[in-house]
Image (cartoon, rainbow, N blue to C red; front, side):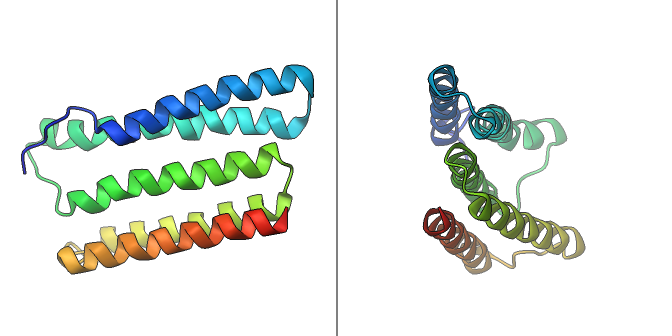
Length: 155
């Protein structure tokens, strides 16, 4: 599949949005200093901006330097968007001081990431075709929505 963009535009836009959010958090911290806002700022920069943009670039760079093709490129691209949503949930939980949402969001998504990584490393055919890839992305989206709902309701 031929790529139209060097860096996928949606993750790049999300990275820029996280950068704007980080500056907004700096302004909020100037008016209402709190440790939660400080943690939210660190995670907006580290997870939301740097990590998302780096992953978006690596989607292009890894196949280019290794002369290999992604087996499930749609899954990889979808994962970047899931990371954006999860990072926003975590930043929101820190900024609003909802520790239950932070713990649940971080724990659930970290476990899911380890499960996906283990499956991908141990089974060369993972996720088993386009249907499997859609299933993995669909389940990941459902988990992220549930985590976000838990974070909002626990606040």
